[in-house]
Length: 77
Image 1 (cartoon, rainbow, N blue to C red):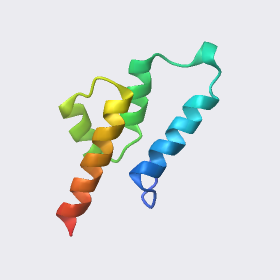
Image 2: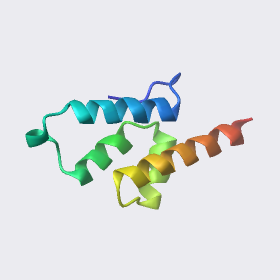
Image 3: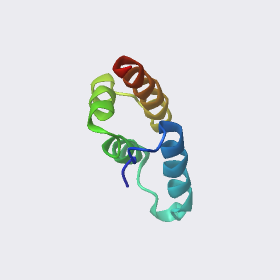
């Protein structure tokens, strides 16, 4: 799973969360792995900043991804 170029960060997070909810509870990966999977699915620049900032939880990573993506979009304009 990767974030599509045309997909907003919020839409990607919603799609990622839906996928996680569909995984049976007895086989869901540990939370730290979910965070790693999420970060690895992001565009390289966003992933770089998230790895640098080291969010502690998936929710923190998702919030930071929205903020970082918004900042990168603004800096291009």
